[in-house]
Length: 153
Image (cartoon, rainbow, N blue to C red; front, side):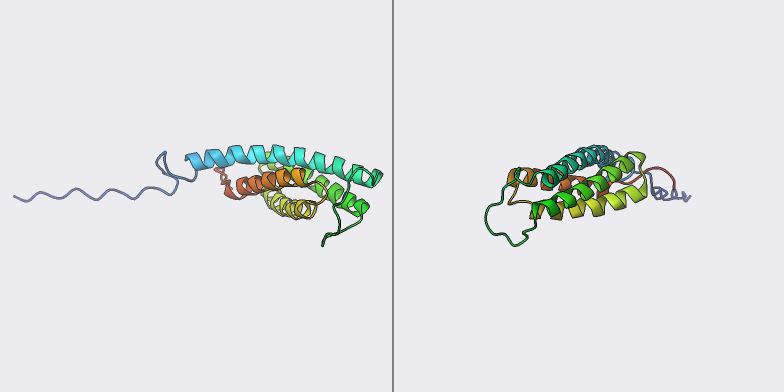
């Protein structure tokens, strides 16, 4: 008498993951979703601070001081306009992140990348603040690139 072997188990569905897996439904997605919400909030706050920083630099060049010659030396009024424009773009992209729009993630990544470059070049004028904004921008980029929507497209 021969017994038939049971059939092999079916492979798991693409979205069927165990709780420890990274991906939709796993803890990695929860962290990235929370990071995206925090990233959007940080983008709005950062953008508002950049707008205020830009207005201050445009209105009164005596608020900021420079520390000698620097390779990326611009007039403070020019820096003010750069921070003002980038700040407005960051605020708009930050509000877009709250909707979960794909365009907001793409625009947010580009604008935050530009803000990172601007803050690197702003180091001689405000070193402590620039370092804080660079670290914040890196976290925002991480959250924007690691978020995977579980909604059907």
